Amino acid sequence: LREIIYDIGGGIPGGKAFKAAQTGGPSGGCLPADCLDTPIDYDSLTKLGSMMGSGGLIVMDEDTCMVDLARFFLDFTVDESCGKCPPCRIGTKRMHEILVRITEGKGEPEDLDKLEILAKNIKASALCGLGQSAPNPVLSTMKYFRDEYMAHVVDKKCPAGVCKSMVKFIIDTDVCRNCGICKKNCPTGAISGDKNTPFVIDQDKCVKCGVCMEKCPFKSIYKNA
Image 1 (cartoon, helix red, strand yellow):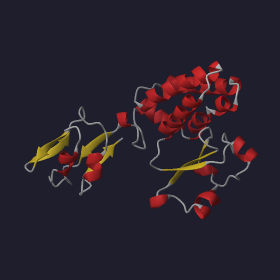
Image 2 (cartoon, one colour):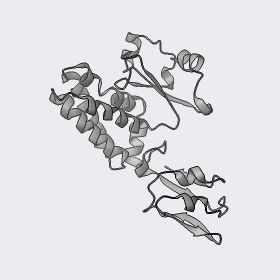
Image 3 (cartoon, one colour):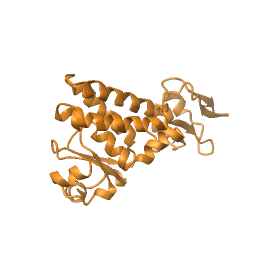
Image 4 (cartoon, helix red, strand yellow):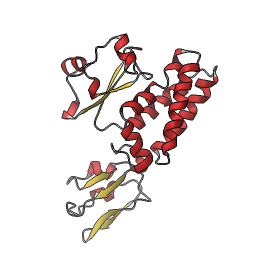
């Protein structure tokens, strides 16, 4: 895996740290940095909770939220389910609902137990390969990145700063030059202030789009995850 990512693929863009790699397509498992020296073959990947699958390889860097990633891939599975068997038709929807709740900051620790129970039952009872492999992204991220799940359900924080419901954009008044560019570009009018008054963001109006941070020429806006 290391050879494909770093020697053939050229490594992680922007010099960022490697976080995980998903092998096998949307139903494959996500492997952490500890697994970089894993041989790319059927048995080796299966033992780690992933698979060869379609041969796809997706590499994630330090800015990826693994909980949100699991939710993203379950979106695909829910849409692709043919609906013939209840484990896949109903089970994946219930898993997706739990993951959405967690990424919105409404999850509880017991949701993690529910996710694992649902995932294992779906793997064991779904009729086809889609349903049987659908829980892989969830089970693998819970196994290798459980600390991120705990941060979401216990601390109500997204360590990667991806889950919008848990993120706040804040203006550092010590760095801000009061230029007003952030205010001009805010689509919801959430920023107030002028040349004589410190600029602040109204968190109730903020939609977490990140335009203010992107447009600020002085890098005075940051995400508090």
